[in-house]
Length: 326
Image (cartoon, rainbow, N blue to C red; front, side, top):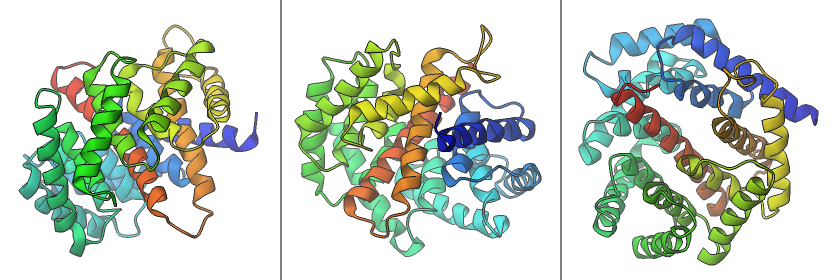
């Protein structure tokens, strides 16, 4: 196995173990997502700093603040990598105060505020959120039964697109029409359509590329869970070579299958493990792209697509927590 992949996977596992020590009662869906915050940056979680950040969030977020809710583990991970976590938390609070004016108080607004605090300067935040709110309104007009609070996070990322709103909606609708016959979940297909609409290229090429990657994995006995399809969509935009993407995912999946927590009857199920392999594949490509000096519009869209996919996983964790499912 390539040494870089081995190191990436081991870092991911080590980070999960550290986070589990600090946040003992979280949904099992949250640990890998929070661990990936560190792994994507190529660093190892610091238990002492995580505990410090957990305390900051607990003391300063307030009893009824959503910043202390589902997104708190992710927030602690972000804060622990900052030179001044307390000051960084105050920045996130300001972002949340602005975000909830557009999208209301919720776990989703808190999550969007956390992620945007690392992506946009404060002076431009209101403009981004105002456009995001309009995109969300248009999405609800098209699919009122499918569009929920979790889509507000996607709408926030769509606001970074250089396409106008009409072009974005047209792209989404065409993607949806082409993907729905293939995949059963309307919610997942809508999310994937939103992600793909951020990426340049023809609708047919983008959807065919995703379907081909899904089928390649399936042919190797790895059926990707349609409810995690957003993560696979974020992988599909990384490279034109689907065989290369498949081989990378399978190599990572093979390594994980031998590790504690993934192996055996009590280990994580195969479809979830494959989703983790998809997350790590995006990390691997991010490392390569970070070496480039130019940040093109397509690169920004790709980063937004990857972040949006992670948002959906956290939204899923929030939904499971609400009904008491781990």
